[in-house]
Amino acid sequence: MSDRVRQGSSVSDIVREALEAYLGVRPTARLTERPTQSASASASTSAVSGTTSANMSDVLSAMLSDIVSNAMSDVSASVSDVTDIRARLAQLEQRVEVLSASVRQSSRLSDMPGDTSPPAQPSPQFLGTYDPHAAAARIQELRRQAFTLTQIAAQLTAEGVPTRYGLPWEHSSVRYVLKRYGEG
Image 1: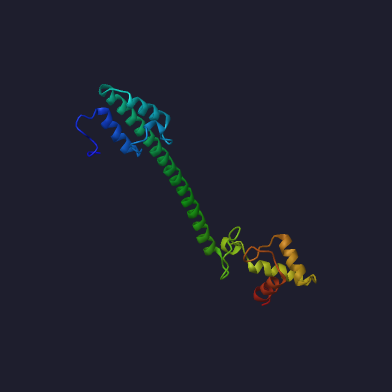
Image 2: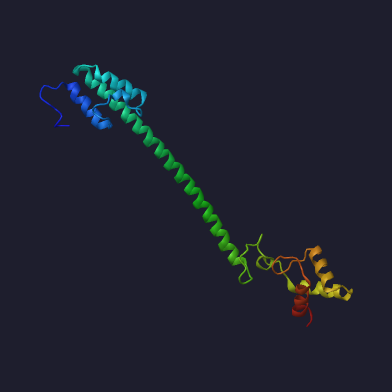
C-alpha cells in the first residue's frame, strides 16, 4: 500500500485503498460491487466513498464494529458447539462407565468359564439360595413316584426350585444333582 500512496492523496483515497486491500477487493473494483459483503458493510463502504475526513473515523468505527460483532457471533456459536460436544462427551463417558461396571460385575458373577453373556440377575449360587441337597431330596421323592428325568426337570422348574445358575432344569442337571448329592 505504501507504494500506492502519493503525496497529495486525500485521506479518503488512502482509506479506500487500505479497505480494498484488507477486504480483498481489486483496486479497480468498487467496494459496493463485492457480492459477499453484508448489507451493513455495503452501506458503510458506500458512505466511505462520499465522506469527508472528519466523518471518516465514524464510518470506520461503524465498519469495525460490524466486523467485530460478526466475529463475536461466530466465536459465540463455536463456543456453544464446543459446550454441546463436551456435554455429549460427558454423557457418553457416564454410559461407558455404567457398561464397564456391568461387565465387571457380570464377569465376577459368571461361574461358567468362557461365558461372556451377562446374567439377567445374580445366580442363586451367588445369592446363597441354591441348595443342591434340598434339590436332590425333591428329585429322589419324584423318582420314587416313577417320574422320568425329563418330567422331574419340568416339575422342579414349575415349582421354582433354583438351579445352580438360575436356568431352567434339564434332564442332565437332574441326573448330575441326583448322582452327586442324592445317592449316597
